Amino acid sequence: MNSVAQLSSWSGTLLSLLMLAGLMLAAGGVWVLVKQPRNRRQGWLMIVAALVMFGNVAIWAVPVGP
Image (cartoon, rainbow, N blue to C red; front, side):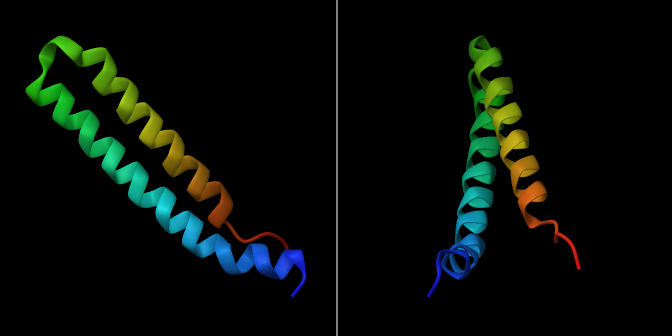
């Protein structure tokens, strides 16, 4: 198996793990905003980091070329 085929076989798993991590990060950010108002900046940064992760997944999931 060449490296390109091996990369594509793992890409679905990696993108799924990244989505799960982003969901947990976003949920944690919302929890921090609700339960710990003194750490609002940290909560917002967690939500922004989750959005960046979702954007990365969206970029990698778009099919390329014919």
